[in-house]
Length: 335
Image (cartoon, rainbow, N blue to C red; front, side):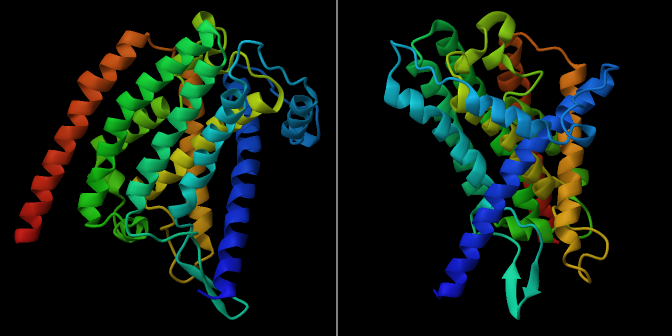
């Protein structure tokens, strides 16, 4: 491994972290503006032109807030929990390809950080880690509301991860590979959302539950649990939880766009590889808009119905979808 390769990895990793961090800031602004329009309001429009500097103002406000740690809290775990939550959100997209490759300064540069053979397995493994941060935050706070929020989140994430994982098996079977680049290349003519409509719908619903978004935002149900697992958090520790939620929104949008909507594939992408990231970004924006639209439209569902939906509806349908896809793939390959 030469120094140029290591430098390339470092630069791409820094770029991805900066992109996800800036993306988180402006997804919050997008959400506030879209929700305001849907509710016949204006939304943030005071700080900067069109309110574009509002995320910076929010960040400064959170940094300036006093850091509070409850007297009865487990201080080490209380401090580590937000970090454990935000790191998986940042690293999960390392295997998502932004395009094929571009030639820069005479060097062929792949538009992904890591092209591993088991990319989908990596995505599922990293997704499951973020549960620990939320559970530890609820437990370490020494607060009943936070504890209930942490327990709810753990149960919800484990329940919906089964359906989420099974929904990704369909694209793996159709592409015949767990390599994310191979899955994207297999969608050159037809995106898998058309061949796997049930899988795509299950993925989308399960991803909403996985990132605790409405109507599945039970872990932070403010009417019942004050603020859920981050009740006792303030200042930058609270900001890290906030950051993790919105970065995960972008991440699941990128995963969904890659696995079901063709990723960076689009017209003229073979002739102009720089179009790949633009197509991927556009598809992610559409998925984020639908997330926000759902939050503005649907009320939060009751917790027992949430769990019943996960175990009694989505899990069996996802299993049936895998079974049918497997039969179709076997019969097609025999011809």
